[in-house]
Length: 279
Image 1 (cartoon, rainbow, N blue to C red):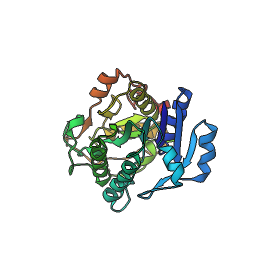
Image 2 (tube, rainbow, N blue to C red):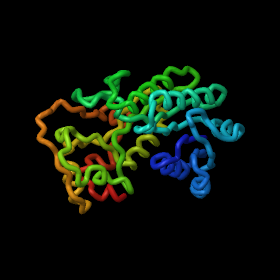
Image 3 (tube, rainbow, N blue to C red):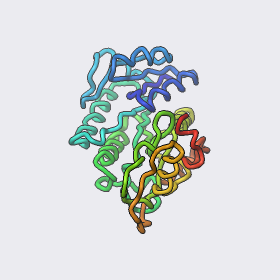
Image 4 (cartoon, rainbow, N blue to C red):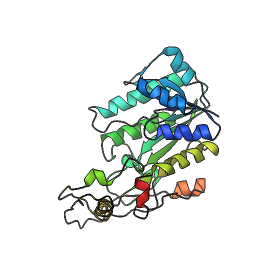
């Protein structure tokens, strides 16, 4: 296939490299000139494009970038960006505009489990509703999902990833040494980068269209257990948590993904695979 990946960062770049190795023709975008050569060295046709929030870059180059069978849209909203909802939906609107006359038939949108509320038990794909996301960035994503899925000139599949870890992204670094953290009973909803790439590849190879998937590992240990253990494994000061009697926290279900894709996780439980944090 001819695949374009808008956003070749921590996840998009290794995905692009993996798809090249699978025999696909891959175009990848970056916002930094320094990364163009890195993409090219991996057999990825590089493009210098940015969404600020309108698509910026050479007009003919952007037209060529969208000349593809499938677009992987991997542009997460900035959690600390002011007016993130307006900004991110404007980014998506700009992409949709450029797809109007493009041959792209299918879009895969990398979303997040932050579209769900903080509490509420087991979260299935149909449980996300506008106005109830964990944070503004999650609200931006659920609105972006709807914008893409409402289009009739291409099909969109949404993948809601949990917290990403693996390789140089060690979750112990986020909370190590911190004191009196609330919500210790809240289960973690995480996924290793290798599983992200495997899942996206399975969706592409099986031509899955018009679906929404939760992409989180099987294991959901509570934060007060998980972060203490991994900090100790990494030789860091463990965090401490406030007493917590609350049990009404969200657990994101991966049942649909495992059933439809017949998928088995490479890293099913982040507690069982300490080496996964270093790759």
